[in-house]
Every structure is written in C-alpha cells, then in structure tokens.
Length: 71
Image (cartoon, rainbow, N blue to C red; front, side):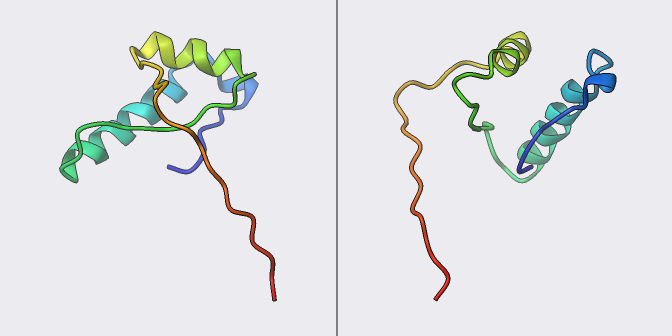
C-alpha cells in the first residue's frame, strides 16, 4: 500500500480499518511481522485513527528523501 486515504463520505464505516487489516494479512502471508508507515506530523486525524488501531509511534527513525532531477 502506498497511500491510505478515505474520502470523508466513507469515513467511520470501517473502510480504513478494513484496508489496514488487509495490509496486515498480506504482510503476515508474506512472512512479515510488522507494518511500518509514515504520517505527516500535522495529521492529527490520522494519528488518532492509527492510535485507535493499537499502532505505536516510532521515535527512533528519521524519514529521508533524496531529490533527483531528470537529465
């Protein structure tokens, strides 16, 4: 999964939770033991949602990006 976004009209209907469960199932079936993802710091709605699923915040990782240009 690259991005999880649920349109306002579909929120609070279990769509996001079902999507995360599908990702967790795929992870387990592939031999994985955890899902790791990023959340924009200002997206409190997302933090609340993931906290409600039982996710924990990782504070020992830093996100990095390397800008590239087309030749």
